[in-house]
Image (cartoon, rainbow, N blue to C red; front, side):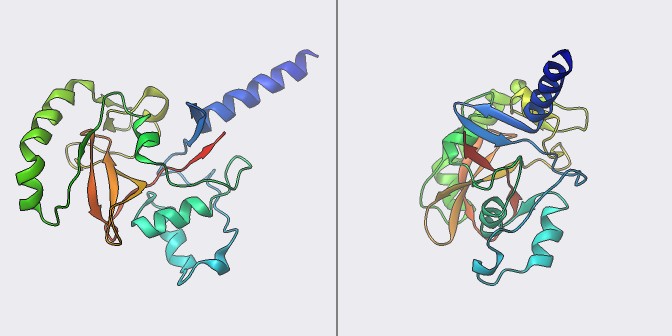
Length: 203
């Protein structure tokens, strides 16, 4: 009986370290750089148009940093912890990881000048206000994410200051939303650029 209980406890610890549960949403909690325990099996590879498996695997095995379309494909085809129904988070779900409120710099801007007119001053003030809430992990990540995630998050520091993560929200065919988990800002970016991806599923 003791051995059964010990085994169950150990399983719970391992499971908890690889998946975090917040508000009935399960969050992927794998390292962005280590691939030794990384499992990514394509369930529906044939159904994905113009799917380049070699390119896809090369990208996700490096840093899980990719464009929005590939990020969606990655989550949809992820087999992890015995589940197959992973997806990109909504902005509300990803904000659950943050230690502070996110400033949403939204609008119909398509250039930095348009963004600056609408949001730059407020965004700068917000970044200053949350600076003291950033935490640094042992590998140098400097983010506003909760403790459960900090150790496995990508290396984001003064040399690589942007901490953008994709969410599922779209503005139109060209733009989707990222949340910057270093500066606690959400905004629209072109789907063709790269950002980090972290998948979720309902428990």
